Length: 122
Image (cartoon, rainbow, N blue to C red; front, side):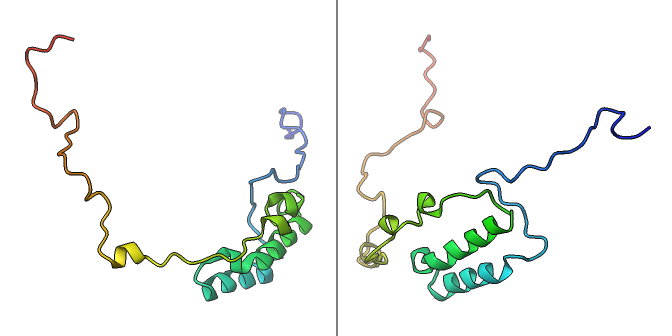
C-alpha cells in the first residue's frame, strides 16, 4: 500500500511563519550571520551598533526562504526606530556601595514562615 492510499496524502510545503526560524542547513546566510556575530563580539553585545548587519542577515534569510518575507521597517529597522546617542550603564550606584533592598528595615515573613495559629478557623 502506498502512503497516499493510507490517508497521508501529498505534503504541502508552506513558507515559514513569522517568528519561526528554520535552520540554515545549506549555510546560505552564514557570511551575514558571522559578520553580525563578529560585530556583536567587537561591540560587547551592544546590538544597536550592529543594526545594519542584523538587517542584512534577516534580509538574507527572507531572500532564501528561511523566514517569511516581512517589511524590515515594520520590524524595527526603519530610521525612526534607530537607537541614537545610546549610553552604556556605568554602574555608578553599585560602585558607590548601593545594594538593592537594604532600605527595607521590617522583617518580612512568608505565610509558611509565620507561626501556626491553632485558634484560627477559616
